[in-house]
Length: 184
Image (tube, rainbow, N blue to C red):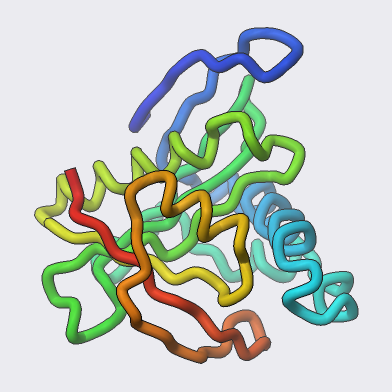
């Protein structure tokens, strides 16, 4: 299923960006984007030793694209001329107090494609998916100190709501801030 498609200007030539559901065969490409985005975006926020040791192969083995996920969890990828350049994972909020909220669980774009509109396209498609599932509100969590991400989400209509948590993700304890917005 193709969720969305548009032509974008990326500095060299017009290229078609397609957003579609992730498939099992996308696992390594998604993991590569995930690792590269963490290594670039979280540098200075997480230990260099940890970031340098991340391996796409380790993450790819944990993905279950195409399988039924609890809470309507779905990952969509953005491809540029067939190459995965970013992804968004959405589903029902993991917080039991947010029963009517959908969650953007992950949104990452390859650093080489930052600033080209791929993240905004993925966020728009992810929000549309959540709205289509009947969620009126969206939530997401941003790593405390990640000013670039916080600016991006604010520019796209998300605002911090005061929620904070500390959790372990991929073996690292992280402090995160909750952002919220009404879904279209």
